[in-house]
Image (cartoon, rainbow, N blue to C red):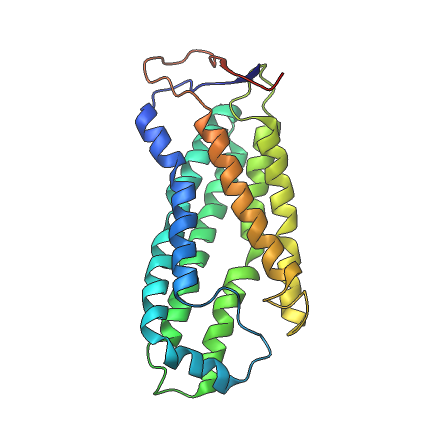
Length: 252
């Protein structure tokens, strides 16, 4: 059996589950807007300014609606990250330094991510009235916000990983594999920095190294953390007790 812990304070099980499921919800809402706007797969970074401007002129309404959906989905970073921070605060108890690091980094991350669709929506606001070079610059700016802003995300998720792995209880609140997953996720965001040096190939913002690996590992992290969060048994009827082990069947 695999043992996981429960809350030591008061928390509604329904509220806990709702906040845990915000993770998959933000991915679904964001990706729906991402697809609707036509930004997946990513455009070619070496495309001409006129080519990018024509894309915005041809799909203006779809891009605008897609950006609204992306903005809503990405704003959900805040409540999802707060639930994770509550878990690590339970782990750290009196000196929740890593939890505070998470919250500060989470605030920065949430600000950055809502600026991504805002920038693309701005590019789609007057596609016929501005120079194609301006439209392409705004389009590129959205991609830089998407990928090149990786450091606060690595700090946030890395702090989660360290906090989880520092839990020395026999029945840890979050499983240790979620800590290792968080550390690997924080590390694999870093290749996105290479996009600033390339307009073609795997390290450009439509490439495997700069876009697909960081994006894929983030979705894996959300899925994994959601599973880990849902395995916690919030006991709103107890206060100040030691974590109660919850047996979870494992494969024989």
